[in-house]
Image (tube, rainbow, N blue to C red; front, side, top):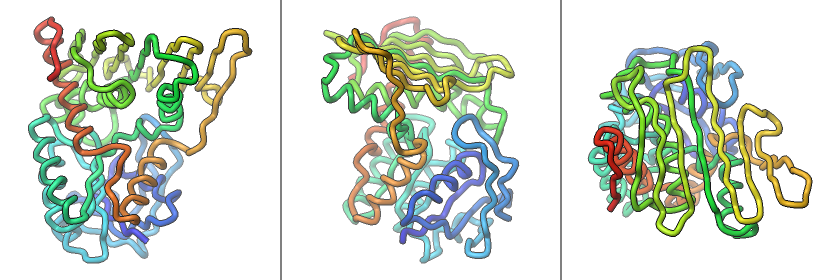
Amino acid sequence: MINVGIIGTGFMAVAHIRAYRKVPNARIVALANPSGRHLDGDFSHVAGNVGSQEPVRLDMSAVRAYRRVEDLLADPDVHVIDICTPTPTHVDLCLAALAAGKHVLVEKPIARTSAEARRIAAAAALAAAKGIFLMPALCIRFWPEYAWTRQVIASGIHGKVLDARFRRVAQAPGWGHGHFLRGDQSGGGLLDLHVHDTDFVVHCFGRPAFVTSSGYSRVSGAIDHVVTLFHYPGGPTVSAEGSWAMSDGFGFNMAFTVNLERATLDFDIARGNDALRVFVPGQAPVTVKPDGGDGYVGELRHFIDSIAARRAPSVVTPADAVSSIEVCEAEERSIQESATIPLP
């Protein structure tokens, strides 16, 4: 059994608690939050933008509650530290947890800048040599419909990808810490939300040669709406839109369309049970329902299974998280300079 201590008690912690309940060899044994918020285990009023909204109440009879992070890190019964705190805290918490000999799962973005992300990746590399592993929580790589689509792309069963379009748009986040609406801390919609699709684009097609982006700030002072063309010489044509700029009441939507030589794959979470549809010439459209629950379950299962097997998680690595932030920073530069930006 892998024992988990969670730092932070907001929406992402609740999403992870729900997911851990579906991972047989994981057990939550501790929570930490300096403010003391939700350390009674009652998360019934915590909500977010995706995943189950079922109220969560954690039985604290077997879970230790800490106001001091240092006390959690010193707990010998905790094997894994799950960091669900605001982005500006990630560097110090990751470095401290790794130094304490704990495996680490850290929410995205793993840091506010690529330079800070590289500090985490360097510490993770040293820890990995000692059998201590860190995994960034880039959950879209594990979201069943996205993972299934990547498998189809890689298999070549429907030929090459001609074009792919991704969309992740929402009203400004109204839950949790005020840091979301401080772009200097969160990175705005570009870094905190759009990073999911930037990462998935790189996951499917590799690092682009150039990016051309357009966008604007609306709520955070950083880039809150972005539309990017990812340049791949010789194809495919790949674009993504990300936003925190929708008006109140809009809610949240994620969608994509991947057009291959012999099929079109179309996903829209707004369609519910018919979210993922496949269109093949000469055949009736088909709804595909991949197994696996939501992406949080797949993400945590992969992480916990890797730790139990004493191997580094392979689906997403610290280097992947660094690269995604680097691409997002290139997108930001493209908007600021009205230019196409190369990526080394």
